[in-house]
Amino acid sequence: MTSVATADDDSSRLLGSSTPRLLSVRDLKTYFFQDDGVVKAVDGASFDVYAGKTLGIVGESGCGKSVTARSIMRIVDRPGRVVGGQILLRRESRDGTASVVDLAKLKADGAEMRAINGGEIALIFQEPMTSFSPVHTIGDQIVEAIRLHRRVSRKEARDRAIELLRMVGIPRPEGRVDEYAHQLSGGLRQRAMIAMALAADPRVLIADEPTTALDVTTQAQILDLLRELQERNGMAIMLITHDLGVIAEMADDVVVMYLGRVVEEGPVDDIFYAPKHPYTQALLRSIPTVDSTPRTRLPTISGAIPHPYNRPAGCPFHTRCPEMMPGLCDVEEPALARVGPHQQAACFLYPEVRAASRVQDDAAGATLVAGGAG
Image (cartoon, rainbow, N blue to C red):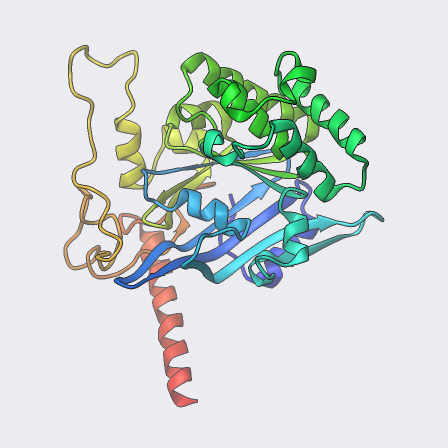
């Protein structure tokens, strides 16, 4: 994983890296403006997604994982909207030249954003039963997705839909293509959702809890399918889940989110074997292992995620952190800084974070002074 960089630096890296960085999110902020106050669902998240690699995003429910995915695709429900940051997408034209576009600057319902959604970035929704239309067959919905991004006849699109259903392992696709979502089992619905996401061969696939509510056998089949499709198509996968077991099996890099912010990121092995942030450490302690003592309670994280209208000052995790330092963690906000060869964390336990936080505060202060002088 790389550290936060400037927009110009990010653009050059997106265009010139030996391993293409297809998507670069920088300081993303998505707020919901309610009558009772402002909910900062995503509050300064930064991460990268690489071609042929899987980025796992983990955290408790309410940490902003799904809103981050919807922000990238600019489909955040009102009254929410992206209020800051960059969503840099590397694109390739037919002549092979590459360019970078900031999705945050595009009109959410504009023609260019509609072409990107489904065409270059696809989303597997968390619950396929509610994501599919109940009054249209799955085939009609896949055909619509195909014809939205490709100039083909309806028959050609239907043939492509059947091919996609066969590719994701749905038996008898010639018959299933004319069935409705409620006629399929949970596993088949999820496969059909994956087929629709792959309709236009996207380069980035966002999978939002793709194994939720599925039995363990079906979960394994879905994960194997995603891995096989990635190897076949070379696409990047952004895998959102609260299941650390899935992350251990699927991810190359991991982003740990808490209260809308990235608190740690790094390669999957480093995160699992040498976690830096107390929140990451607590999440890993809560996983049962074969060495766990039978009939004993698993460790839990004390407290709960703060109410959206009552966000704590300083480090967002300090109210639940056993390492909390009074006068520091409850006052100042830690910056995300490099704390190892390949890891970054936002915790004052590390001198690198303290130094980065001072630089961040000095820069913010200078900005305020300059603004006042103007």
